[in-house]
Image 1 (cartoon, one colour):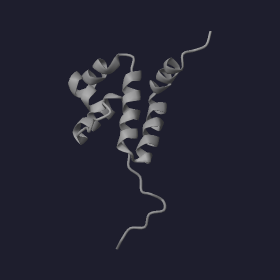
Image 2: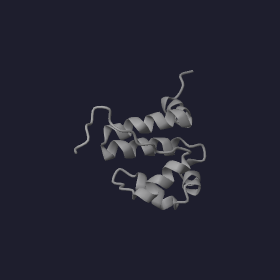
Image 3: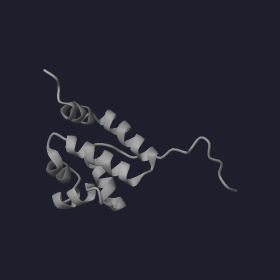
Image 4: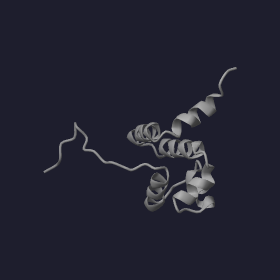
Length: 102
């Protein structure tokens, strides 16, 4: 029997290492819609769903749905709570080809 692609995708995104890599690629892209889509995909993959994630992130369920919608525009504070609720952390690195302006 063929395995459901969405189920496989969700199973993989439950792995924090894979989720971190997936979200890092979206952040590298820099497009807000791509970043929101990646966050939404990771959130929907959680075994306890959006409601469980909202509780872990200390955010309201309705706020979580609005934030992750295609028209969502989360505040930085909500974004960081969501990241921590997913068991992830953000890391900033210097661009290797960027020269600082002096």
